[in-house]
Amino acid sequence: MDSRPVGFFDSGFGGASVLAKALSMLPNEDYIYFGDDANAPYGDKSDGDIARLTFAAMDALASFGVKAIVLACNTATATCVGDVRKHLSIPVVSVEPAIKPACGTPGSGKILMLGTAATTRLARYRALCARMPRPERIVSVACPGLVERIERGLIRPGDFDDLLDSYLSFLHGKQIDGIVLGCTHYVFIGEAISVYAKARFTGECRLFDGNAATVRQLGRVLEKNGLVNGAGRARVEYHTSGDRARLEPLFRSLIQSEDRAF
Ligand code: DGL
Figure (tube, rainbow, N blue to C red):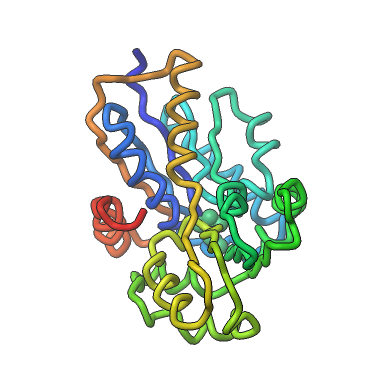
């Protein structure tokens, strides 16, 4: 039994969607969350800047005495998860776009992957797509601007339609079988994306995210390394590089709404 907390990291609120899953699936652990809100969004930054900020955050979390870290950020994972693993002596679990389950959807329509500019351009994500059975089915679209609105607390249907129109109008009327929420922030706006998509595309537009799979992997890693707590109470200590007084209430309300889509 190891009573140390598990560390969670994202550029901002996005990782809270993964943490919400952990609170329900692994309630006998305690958690420390660090959001680098002052530097969000990461997705529009260079690889070098994303890696530098991610490493600084990893060191901050490690200094809090966590026993494992969840890199709850697709952008940081695609940029530098391999180097982060080499750098730290504790296990690192990471989230990745749920391309694999989405590509398992039967049908002749497209699989739409929405992610940050960095995730969609990086080799790790491109290699993941290339391994899929029908990679030509995948349409990857970078959606700059969504994260900034989510960081401001916007999550409702309609709040993103202008941005989504500017990125997705070339697909209007097309058959979309699945939509991958390839940024942990987007999981909070699954309903907004679904409402938008069903009004403009044909096909089922089924949503996919990697959050539950990431938490299952965290459980396996804790087990395998003898790090399970068992007596924790899903306590969450919150840290941010941004304005804590403004951000913490939003963060707490996001992690409590577990009965929503994520
Ligand atoms: N939530 C993050 C992700 O999963 C990063 C978003 C950003 O900072 O651009 O990609």
